[in-house]
Length: 346
Image (cartoon, rainbow, N blue to C red):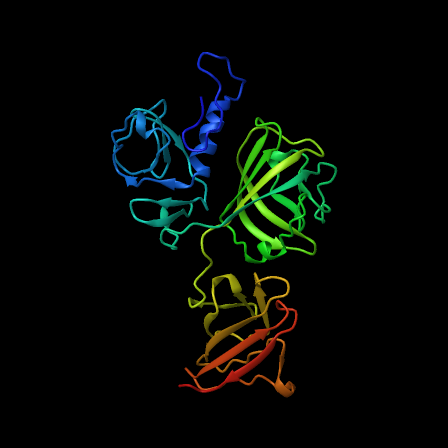
């Protein structure tokens, strides 16, 4: 017997399973890895044997308790005619809604459009060896993957070297990868050992990557040197760079979150003494941010982010309601900032 989507081998009927039923875990993998739901349904659809393996998003209507009643937004995985296994979604889960022709993402409260139409996040399958000798935030070494906790199920970060055990360089992949995807670890020779991780952050370090993760399901822990098949699935498309975000200052500091887009507005309420660029795009990359500054009724001053041409001061317009536009650029991921300002658009 195998699962309907990925042909994962099940235990035969009437054979005693371990304390953690393998067939249940196989069903979870089978439901999530195939990455699609038929539709969002208020009431449970009528299913037949041919629908086994299909998934739906549970709406606010009536669904069977088989054996437990679901909650709204659960993923319903059909295991038999009119029988479902219900999976509680985690923030960041990303699935294709076949009926809507769109990708949807669970934001922690509801399923919302993730954009991208029928397209899905790219994925790559590579080989690594498990490194259980260290939990430190450091490069694990060529071809190695390690956890930041000796109890693997409690890990919150995975460290992967830029080079895989089969000699593939993932440097370009790390630069393009975004959060919201999944990391699947499968023992290369023992199908009972596996882990599924939700990726919440991607930090490209020197020689390795740090994946912020949360465990979704697992089939045990890996031993040192175990060969692993690692599948990395990208998250939803990146933020629309044209989004405009309003910011404020706090104790004179203004933080511009690069992950939110390229355009910001601020209405001054105090003197601005410092600027922080958070979540820059990554090593070896540059960026340009635009900030529309509206002067307060009490004239406020603004410190320059980094340097200006000729080292001149950044003197903003002083009349109430005056609008200036500040441009901030970097060619080395924010290490050096260069600023220019266009004044008095009021």
